[in-house]
Length: 330
Image (cartoon, rainbow, N blue to C red; front, side, top):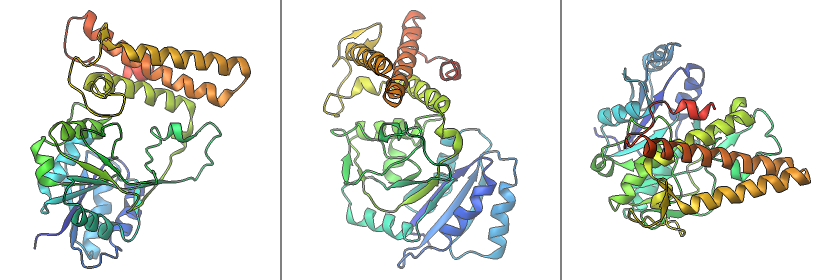
């Protein structure tokens, strides 16, 4: 029978965290909702396949399938999972998440109750094995991949600033297929780029503070080096997808040419960068180390954004830089 929901989980060398996730998914209180789980192995070499096959051999209350995707990249893996899914409603989880026992039921009910939207995003909440540092404020939620806003909010062409994280996202297949799925050209920020295409096509999303997924925050994401590199990589991909160029001050999407530019960069971004530079100087002079680091991370973002655009303009080549890692490790 066709299940009510297909759950797609891409994985790469996370065998140790995969078993707790499978346990959480196979002990769901679904309230009658039928579902299947598809594990997409993206070339793991750590026993991932054995973990899944042992679970299948033991027997599971919901169908569990193993799929191998040889093309490296989470976008390839997610698209392959969707291709193997039997339901018209696809839910995505990351391989290090732990959904609450009512997750399947809550996601399915939200899709039923909101036929006006094409995708639903739920909460992603932290498990702190290591106490977070003092400088890790809400302004740094992006690098640790959390999503815990208290109020529901539509995300669409008129409200495009927010991003629904693929760590807890459900999408109707028809909308997914209409824009061609996730782009393998984006090893980072693929969820935002995918959603920007949805909003341009007139689709709608909705964030709801429901269906919690808990994620253990790795210690490496609590280092300043990681946050600097994350901001640099994000600036690079935002420059390629023209994310900031297509957002109005109110967060709605605008057409190309809306902003005046200099060297391919909207001029307001230079002003924002200058504001953070002044903030960094003030914080440094007054000894406010946490505030100074916040401004520093934003400066990494802008410098990476500018370098990507300038390199494209100066090379007279519309293609993006070939090696974005050199920006994130600079």
